[in-house]
Image 1: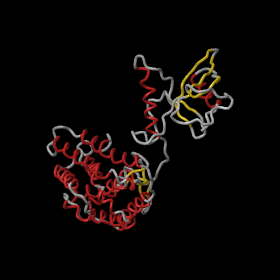
Image 2: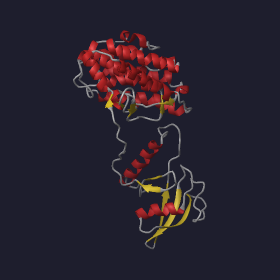
Image 3: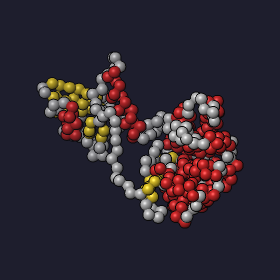
Image 4: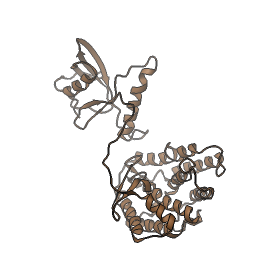
Length: 361
């Protein structure tokens, strides 16, 4: 990217009156011709910018974060979060260098301010359709599976098989996905921390033991970096909007562009198990049929039986969600107990047997 004088002046003029740039250089380096700008501008290098405003001379340092894999800096949003945080707190610490603003570059090299922001938002298109969980609620009520239900289960499975076929080579991103599944605030450890201390269906000691086993699973599967693929990240029935037939749109992709296929597969199939436990006390009837349609189709299309060797901690994550007294306060205690039976037995299984789910319940 080239750091253009005009772009810098336009940005500074939002903060200072009629700013005129007089010099740009790498911090501690040789100044470049102002009219040229910096052709070799790169992320991670601090630049000294000298300018005049209202007859006064100013010197500021423009700094970005180096694009570095690992250490939680993998996505540009990670780096943005750090810079936004720094801008908000530098000036509250006595003796610290002052922050003037935080901003962002566009693809064209323009600079814009984001320093005054308190909350961010996203603006999206409206999607027509009905959430998939409404289908599951209907099936739970009447216990009947129609041809469209089967078609939709297969369509969801085929969709995941398609996106998971897009692979990516990045060791750090796979390590992060496995690490985050166990330790991220939105995943296993964050969920266990959200459980109240005085529950009658699970103790703190039991949650601690689950976490320890999940750490063991992290070290068991973290080396399978060849599995890194495109994922949705939160593929559950509330994030799927069906229209006519098996035509659907997905919502709210989460936790990174690349991940582990087992994350998506466990997310949707856990809901078939969850609804079936509420209806039958086990995986049975219509939900068992949908579960098997989904899995059989997925494995046939992908040939990924290795998935059954890595899905265990992801099923723990999704089980902790549906067993949560925060998310599901009115759930039958017997269902919660069976969900924790599932957690413990899955963690003790080296290869998950999707054709005998009830043996884990």
